[in-house]
Structures are given as C-alpha cells and as structure tokens.
Length: 167
Image 1 (tube, rainbow, N blue to C red):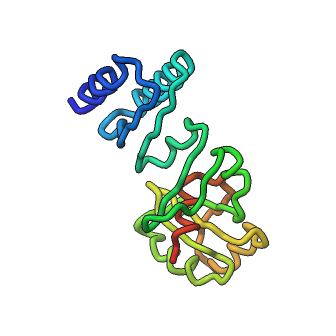
Image 2: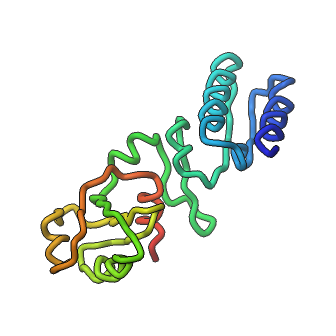
C-alpha cells in the first residue's frame, strides 16, 4: 500500500540523520491518522537532530503542523509566515451552509451578492467567503423564500488560498 511505501521512504530519508530534509508530498496516499503521526515524527526528528524539513503538499490543512508556510500561485509566493498568524489575519468572514441536490442553485445566488468574494463546495457544505461587513442575516435576505441555514465558520487555509487566488 502507498501509505507503507511513504513510511519506508521517510525512514530511508532520515536513517543517515540529515540536517535538511526535502519532502515532496510525503503524505500523499496516507490516511488522515497516519498524516498526523507523520508530522509528529518529523517534529520529533527535527527537535532531536536540530534539522529543518521543507515539505511541499497540496493538503493545505497540513500547514497547521509547520512552523512557517509559503503559499505559491503561478510560480510566485503570495503569502508566507507563521500559520496561526496568517489565519488570524484573514481579512474576510467565512460562512457555511448545507448543500444538496435540492438547493444547489443557491450557489449562484451567493455568487451574485456584491460582498461575497468567493463560494465553493467542500464536501456537503457550501463555503462562503465574504467581506467582514456582512452578516448571516444579510446573506439570508438574498435567499428570499428558500430554506437554508447559514452559520459562521472558522477560516481554513483552503479559504485563505481561494481568497488570494480567485482571479
């Protein structure tokens, strides 16, 4: 299995105790619990050996495990810094609503609202990135008679990346 191959590759990469590790999408194909264990191992390895790890990943949630992150878009750095500082300085509000086949047309409604920066479907949820000036009640007005529960949500690195690259 790919998860076992990734673990063997990590063991091979660290067996000679390098001070600098370059890991390209090392958790690709690894289950979520193993991803957490992977980052715990890397943190422990770095602490014990005074090493640095440079990790590329397309799993943006993995950024929370890093000390410093860089987001690239079209070959350029669009933001970098400490993950918690970056997410705390997010300039927009994020809302969420459940999405189903019956209410899929609400995506277009939210996209037409002037203060909405971006909308995207994430699993069974519609994520709405909007200006800080808008609130749940104002969003609900645009829905008119459609039944839809809108609630605030904490921003994620996906929200951040999408808001920075929605050109």
